[in-house]
Length: 207
Image (cartoon, rainbow, N blue to C red; front, side, top):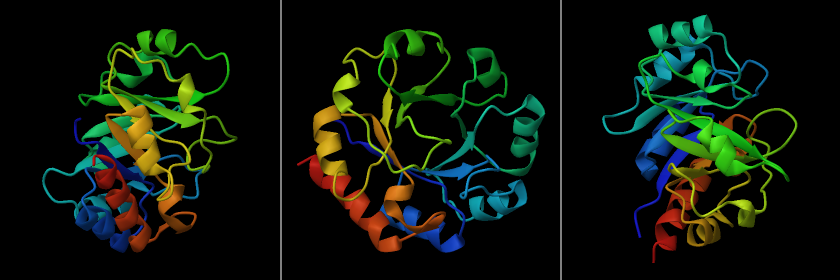
């Protein structure tokens, strides 16, 4: 079994970046969606990104942004991967010179294979629960809805926390897991102990 990669998303403070990096996270995410309580301005994200050492990936999360908005983000923040969380099309996600991953908000009736096929340029498909708003809702979804023959790496999100991530890794065998609210003491405020326990839960699931 491969080693499940770990992304800690929605970081807003220096101490949270350090906690994620020191715990062994593979990637950290900055939310560039103004309505989110985890939103960070580009200048702030640039400050936080300077704390990220080599070989930890910086990811920018966007929800139906205009191209100029993404391009402005890239001028300010040293991002390595783009993550699109809204109703974007393939054409909206490409052309920025960076790989991208596409989120799917899981709900009954969603043909995930058809959805994945409509984003042939994506380097991964992130599965999240369908909630009001975008991301960080703390809700899980029925993992049995995930087909076993997705054409790209699967990133599991949606309601993951220290109590259920081990079971999630064992049952779904995702390429990576993505957590935000599950390691928070308040919206946008991460808890270093929860981050450490979450990473340990993933690692122990490999048995």
